[in-house]
Amino acid sequence: MQHPVIDLGSNLEENLERWSGALARPGAKLAVFKVIYSGKRQQWTAGEISTALRGRVSAKRVTECGKRLVGDGLIRQVSGAWPVVYEKISDVHHYKRRILRLAGNRGKRDSLPTKRKRQVNVRIGSVAHRVARAVEVTVDDIDQFARVRRLGAVVAPRAPLSERRFKAGLRKLFRESGSFPDWGGEKDDFFTNKLKIGGKRYTAAFALKGPGVGVKSITPGKWGKQGNQIQRLVAAPASVFFLQSEAQIHEDSVEQLKKLAEHKASQSGQKLFCGYIDRDDSNRLRRAYPECFSTRKV
Image 1 (cartoon, one colour):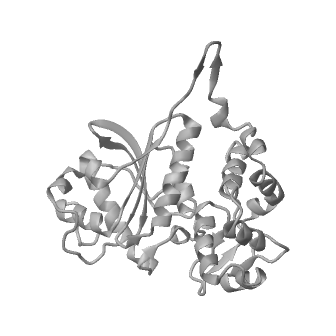
Image 2 (cartoon, helix red, strand yellow):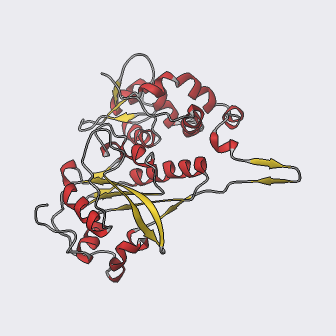
Image 3 (cartoon, rainbow, N blue to C red):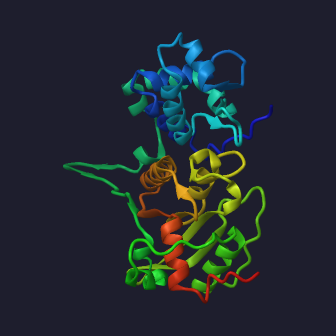
């Protein structure tokens, strides 16, 4: 099986620091990673990993660790497979030994020449730091969504809209005349520089997941055919990043989005924003703006 190559970006050390930091603490997570990347075998189920560890880690615990490793970008979950199947990522496999060496040596991790560290300018008598962070936002914080503030946190559920129709609603709300066709290499499903927070204008990127995904709770592996849509979303040239679905968005997806946004903020030295629009907030938007989110064909 061929694996798509992850975009390592212009600085490999940033990725090595992130990957090795995720494995820095010894325990079940590290043990699961070592099994998956042992030998030439590409795919493993949770039960097979537990057996390889001679039962020291239960299959349930393997699944918990697997979710975190997927969120860290260290493994990939095979879409639609049951029981759950995990597989190697080619770039991670290539640097496996270096990742493990760095995981076990904090000094070496701290000495990696990453862009984030080069942004610290040292002066005699003082140290200048670039402070940046990723701030969590909700639909209530967005100026174009202001009508939802009049509604409660939960409104009567509606039949879910298709991804195409929800995207059409966003286009109307942001008065965006651009075209946003779906294609395999897209970083986002909707992109605009008209989003406002507190009157200030920002560029925003949205990843949309329609009802066709066929699951009740969307984990990181369900975002995109290769399970890397959240990574591609944060790679977009934007300051605000949103996940949207009329299904439940799993907390692991939210955690991955926040970690990647925080990492990008630390690299760029810019304040970024991230958030998610689940089925409750999607229904609030549709009720607040029925003229935009039409159930008629678009």
